[in-house]
Length: 371
Ligand SMILES: Cc1cc2nc3c(=O)[nH]c(=O)nc-3n(C[C@H](O)[C@H](O)[C@H](O)COP(=O)(O)OP(=O)(O)OC[C@H]3O[C@@H](n4cnc5c(N)ncnc54)[C@H](O)[C@@H]3O)c2cc1C
View 1 (cartoon, rainbow, N blue to C red):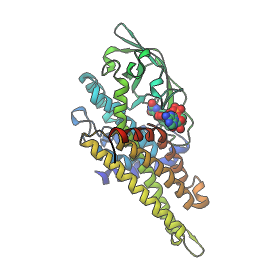
View 2: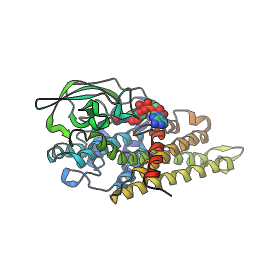
View 3: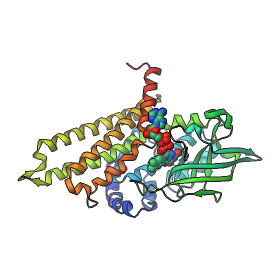
View 4: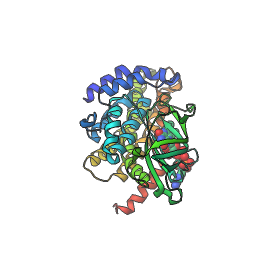
C-alpha cells in the first residue's frame, strides 16, 4: 500500500503543488481521489467506512502525501485527526453513523475549532459560548485559524457551556455547516496556501442537543487527550516535507558543478547532507515510536510532544539547508525548496507551538519519573 500511495502522491499531487502555492484553491479533486484510496479515514474502522488501519500505517501514509504537497498533508491530518478521533472515542453511535462514513470517504472534510483570536496556547481562555436553550444550544463567538474553514462540512467546535468553570466548563459540538456560520476571508500565509485557513464566527447559531459530543464540561479534556494523535500526525507531516527537501538537495548536489566538480564533493556540502539525513531519520524514528506506542494503547503525551517538537524543528533546519545547497536557485520559485522552507515553518506552530511541546515534555518528565 505504501508504494501505491507514494506513486499516487508523486503522480497526482506533487505536480499540482507549485500551482496550488501560487494560485491557491481547495484541492477537492485530489481529496476525492484520496478518499477513494482510504486516505481520509485511515484510523476509522471499516464498519464506519474507514480503512481500519493503525497509527503506524497512518504516519507512514501521511509522510508520503506531505512529501508531495504539505497543504494536502495538513488537510489530511486535520480531517483524519481530531474530528474523526473525537467522534470515534466520545461520539454517540448516531453521530458516528451520521458523520464518519462521509468524512472517511472524502465526501465531507472535517475541521477542528479550538483556537480563538485572543488565545491559542492558552485555549481554556476561550470565550465562545454555548448557551442551553430548548432542544439544543446557541453558539456565539469567534474561532481563529480554522484549517479548511468554509470548505469543510463538519466542524468539531469547543465552546463554554459553563463560563465560570474554566477548562471544566468547555463542551464539544459537532456542527454541520449552516448559514448561521460566518467565515472570514482566507488568511494570507507564509506557506501551505491550499490548506485554507479562516476565522469562523457564530452568531447565536443553533446546534441541536444531539450534536453535543461526550457530555457537558468534558470537551477540553477530550480535546487534549486527542491532541496526542494530532501531534504525531504533524510530526509525520514535518518528516514528509523534510524528506522532499533532503531528496531535492541531494540530487542537486550531484548535478551542480563548481570549481570543476559536483558540489557534493565539497565537504561543506556533504556534511550538511549528512546532518540533514541523520535528523530526518531521527525525526522519523521518534514519530514511528510514538505511533507504535499509541497502537499499543499506551498514553503517549510525552512521546507525541517529543516527536512533534523534534520533527518540526528538524524540518525547519533541513529545509533551511536545502535552500542553501541550491545557492541562488534555492531562493527562486523555479525550484521547490523555497516552498518546502515556507511550508515547514508552521509545523513548529500549529497543534501546539514548540514552546508548548517543551512545557508538556517538561511536565511529563516529573509525572512519569523519566530517567
Ligand atoms: C496555518 C495554521 C493552521 C491552524 N489550524 C488550526 C485549526 O485547524 N484549529 C485550531 O483550533 N487552531 C488552528 N491553528 C492555531 C494554532 O494551533 C495556534 O496558532 C497555536 O496553538 C499558537 O497559538 P497562538 O497563535 O494564539 O499563539 P500564542 O498562544 O499567543 O503564543 C505566542 C507565543 O508565546 C509562546 N507561549 C505561549 N504560552 C507559553 C508558555 N506557557 N511558555 C512559553 N511560551 C509560551 C508561544 O509558544 C508563541 O511563541 C492554526 C494555526 C495556523 C498558523
